[in-house]
Length: 94
Image (cartoon, rainbow, N blue to C red; front, side, top):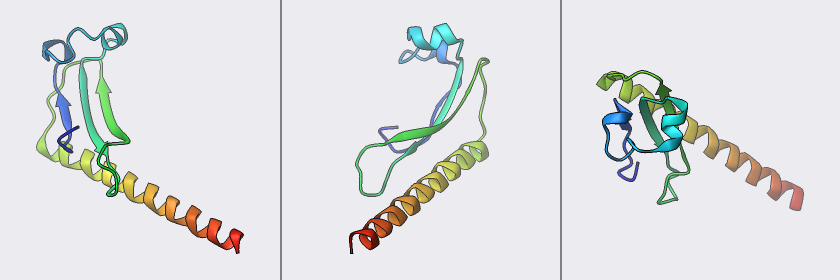
């Protein structure tokens, strides 16, 4: 996610970054794909839209693109909501 790309871990138990994570082991999570939620004005992700499964999976490029599309749409909605709240605050403060 630091790369601002979808992170895909097809088999958590075989990925050295996550294989020994007790939280993942306790829950039986074996697959993860997550697209970062990164506001244009921020340098860091504020979260992610992710898909998890209890079985290892292979994900297609099309599915990765769709996951990124969903994350982009979520960010657009969050930005629109923030702008709306700021507009209401300005009107209320007048």
